[in-house]
Length: 486
Image 1 (cartoon, rainbow, N blue to C red):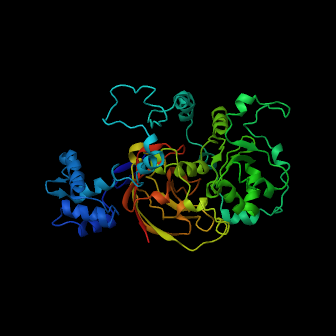
Image 2: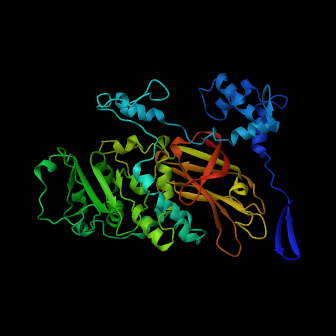
Image 3: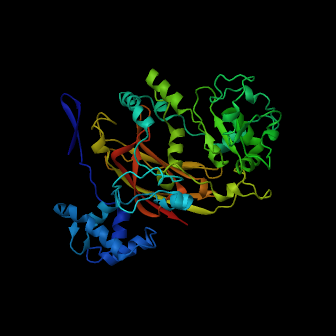
């Protein structure tokens, strides 16, 4: 029993947390097992039919079974296969990741330029000659990351804060926002060069660039003058880079969405925040922008000085979600339709397209808070009342948020609820997942979040690790979910 002290003479007792597999998992196990054991052949069928791993072999299934031998002392391992407990442990393990590992895109993109080794480790560092015209993929954190350690340590000293400050305001609804902005379609843009561009520094118009340096500039910056429509005109003989403030970009989206898509097919469009604000429009990605100055460093600096959490929140979670694609390497390829040069077929995110596919999401259960948080972290006098919010961030027609019921007084909540999300542009959709603890008298407590690129979701029953407000993965907290595309 779990005991909570209410006062000196009174204590409340609650049943212990139960980590029993949810009914949906039990049903799948019964279908793919025989005599209470899931053998090599049955596990292979499960991987192919439920998990969508068409190339799964018996050898791969046997490797999963062999991997459970380390839990033999817990009596979850069977010589001939997996018991229900072992199968459940496999599903909630780190090897059952929710995202695909898209290493193929890296080798496909860079080809022979990618420097690889024949053995597992380099015996000696290659010569400069061997590295000419080569790209090296390294997992070591960059110097800037190590130098920022002091800032992160100061971040960790800040404890619980108000909900709005901790999470950031809710990501705006594109449908409502488009109706709210009623500026003229031909907003004159001769003022946009007056907005402060962080990269311009203290340059004066009369200052000349040295000819030697100027020859190194492959893509020259374009100065926007006159109407916005003129700024997005394409020069067929020259690639340029245009910089706009976030405020001006928001106005341009309303009346020049297709022109922006067409411009970014062969030019660079760069957006910077106004002042010290944080750029937070996912529509910038939807329109094909290559460069978005997020303003994170300014926000983090103010965070350290004021003790707030201005550098983190839902807007930044979307950015984390997008860059989890392609193995988290930092390179995300544009969808092909954003590169379509057909003038009669330019993508417009405001236009509602037919549904391409529907994503079915079942939220089975969650666990791990009891290991990562103190017993009274969420509620002083009882176990937490968790609920999950699930939704889509994408084009206006796809954007939506839904939620489960709250499970009262349970550290291991089992919701077992299913949601459907019709998707018109799945190539730009992000799956948002947030867990909160319901509080009747105060604001609900934050309990974890993650954001995942829909186009890389692996179908089947998957383990989904949750992150804290900063986007760092929590040590033990995970959800067990099922994904299906129909």
